[in-house]
Length: 414
Ligand code: HEM
Image (cartoon, rainbow, N blue to C red; front, side):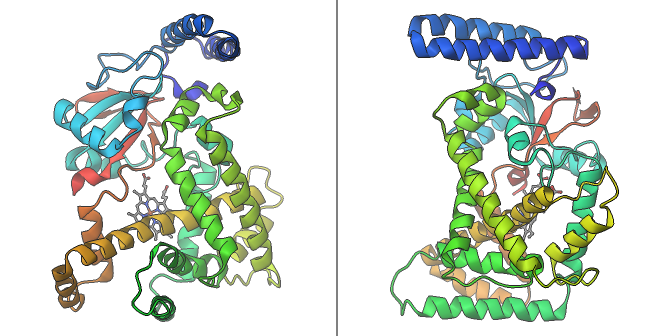
């Protein structure tokens, strides 16, 4: 939480003390909330002022890109709670390609458009490779695993291993293409069982898509009637939605609201605990009969690395990080691709002429290009994952300091 605020020139220790005091102050305010509304209104407003004063709000205004005015305490969080991509598009029209947001005292900058994204992704990739230590990420993965790891050893080791495994156990191999075709036949057989009746293709598509990554992660596919696996994916994908809810933005800004007995963040934490339990069980199942140094899939390869670095106290390989990275690889590949395909089906149902167009282009264009065509016309992912500016730098004409969070609007390129 301390890392998230843009800081005025206070010594780090003073900052930590102030932050602790404010945390307790907010707990105290919440406690009062339970007893009397009038007292709470007063204490919360004072709490906001204290927090803003010490944290410096959104940072040095001279350095900040323009942005919308925010409400006291919660900044622009409420405006983001509904149709964030529409809100951000409007802001970009009003303030330009680079604008600021106040996420409850957390300074964030949103990048839109080709030039700003190219600068951040290509020219300064290492400056923007870090993830912010948001309370949500801290609670869910302790900044470990693959997707949310801080830029450093864990970040490098987990990305290197994942890329290596995707190459060795799948991508680019002829036999892998035939396994994907095999999955397509299972999918079509399952569709045929409906005999032309209407049905929701969500579950089938989710497991079929996930099975492509599952071959690499576990060396096996899951059956379409595997209720446990489907349930795991469903609550995981529910968590993606919950993570973009106003409750979770508030939790990130004021983690002490985690002490309240209600709020959507509790559902998110319950889901995550259930997902991690399930993943641990399947990791154990798929690592049975393993031969060390002869990996059959990602789990085996990870366990080999864990054993190799057992004597290294700084190694980032651990059972916990294995669970996090397996979950992240499943959801990163499944949620995205499934939603693109569901949009594709919807477009084709609504505009049957597109079906002919696609069939004719099958011969000349790769399938990944066709998927990209669909993601161009629908906002599958309205945002990238948040990034953390690791070094002070300049984007466009704005200087960004450490502790700024960055959102890339990759969709703005479409
Ligand atoms: C249509 C399909 C897909 C879309 C639209 C998509 C989109 C994205 C986006 C926007 C990010 C965030 C990048 C960032 O902000 O740092 C991302 C990251 C990632 N995606 Fe995908 N993705 C897709 C398919 C997949 C598949 C099939 C896999 C693998 C199984 C995958 C694995 C990952 C991983 C591991 C990351 C994290 C990369 C990192 O943090 O360095 N994605 N994806």
